Length: 188
Image (cartoon, rainbow, N blue to C red; front, side, top):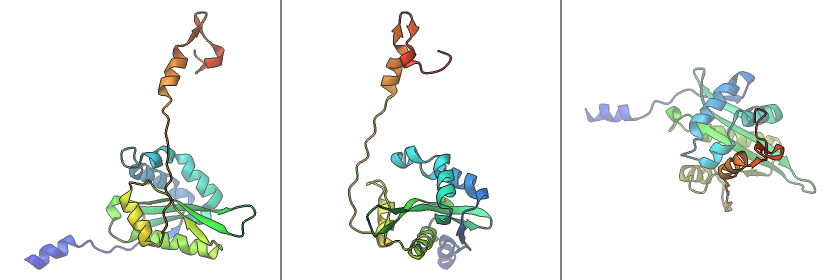
């Protein structure tokens, strides 16, 4: 009986196809990103994830946009770019987004997506890969260290909520009317 219980706990290895993203994948990638990059889990990533992020990368760096699928279902994605700096002999690869649907966790999918991305970067002559994540995203930090990244550099993100200032501007009146300088909408 114990052997049966243990076998049920082991996740079944599934067939995954990793391929270049196609136009028909845009919506699925965007919605999976919305599911993964939430305000409560990763606030800085949440603030920068939007449909334009996906479409812009697809349009500008399609060859570095990968998806993983299982039986025609999106399981994950990797989106990146290359950076060439003026007066530098080095070409950098930048893995901007890496996401795996929680239903596919534990399958080695993030590693497979990363390895394919890394191989693309090598074939493009990239000498160094860059990634960033939030300092308290311990699973991501562990993953990237496992993939060979080292020497993390601290980077601090600051945010400034302007709601208070917007409310002040909306409430500001000049001669009984909203000032044109502070006009927020055409209907004001």
